[in-house]
Image (cartoon, rainbow, N blue to C red; front, side, top):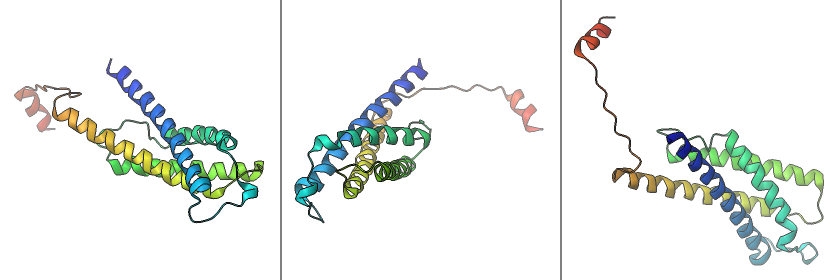
Length: 166
């Protein structure tokens, strides 16, 4: 039963990550094309969001695969938030670089490298914050005894003495 709960938690994390990746991509589009931070968009290259939806879907798939390969969804005991954040950073960097390479060879009519930079940074921030919130929530639940397994280890004294002399 415990294994089933672990799988459901992992699936939930994947779904939340996919949602956050797409949210970050949408915010990156908004920052790049509507707010035009750091660099103005030439009107000839102004594109509606629907043009970038296929890019967002491919990026989501790439990132979820990269996260799986980097062990983001492996639930390790004793792993700190920094360990998870590093895995997210590594997977996101790999996925964004692969996405930029794909778009370089595909040569779409509308393409913004700055959009991918914004998306990568926002993805790292949003997924890192989601892991921090999850960690804080799990700590709060454990302090209340939820999700804690109590274990009693009984060992006889003679059994201990036998192993001690070896």
